[in-house]
Structures are given as structure tokens and as C-alpha cells.
Amino acid sequence: MRLEPYCVEYNYELGKLYEQHGRDEKALENYRLCIENSPYEPKFQLRMGEVYSKMEDYKRAKKHIGRALKIKKDYVEALLLWAKIEETWDKNFQKAYDLYTIAKHFEPDNP
Image (cartoon, rainbow, N blue to C red; front, side, top):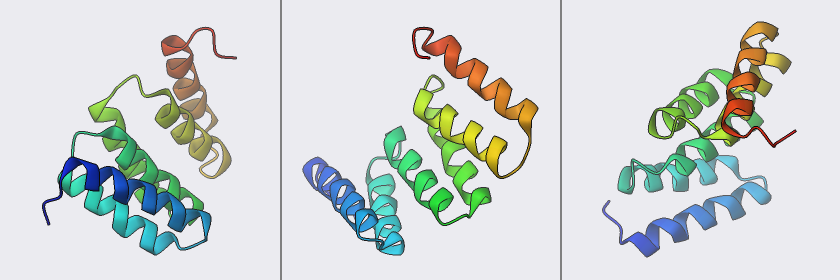
């Protein structure tokens, strides 16, 4: 379904509201609609990754985080979320360290 740009942003905000109320599946529906209509906006992919991470579906989370990073390679929020998944859930500390190092490269003043 093709949406006007203001409707895409509306669906994004609606998705965030669904998340706040614990309705993750509805949030994902809204984010999917955003991605269909604005596929080169990385924040929609990141939100999908965040929701899947919260649902402990780390395979899907990393898939969407990876898509966000393909769109915007210096997306520090996406790098940090992926690193957190690697560190906390996958116990891949080297991969987490590498991702944190890349994020630090893009934002050297960020502790």
C-alpha cells in the first residue's frame, strides 16, 4: 500500500506507541508499512531490529540491523545494538568489541 510521506511518519510514530503499550506485533506491522513505502530510511529497519531484539528473536533483529547499516554504514545506534546482541546473547565478545570499535570511530567523542 503506497502512502504519502506524512503517513509514513505517522505509521512510524504509531508503531512506537504500540511498542510502548507492549503490542510488539502491531508495532512491527506499522514498521513494515514504513519500510515498504520508504525502503531507504534506516531508522525503520533499526526499529524493526529493536522490536525483534526485545522479543528475543536475535536472528531477525540482526537481519534488520544489518539492513539499516547497509543504508547508512555510520549508523552508530545500529552498531551499538548489534554489539549489545553479540555481547549479551551470542557471547561473541570479539565481534561485539569490533562493532564497538567501529561505532567509536564514527563518534570519537562518545564515551
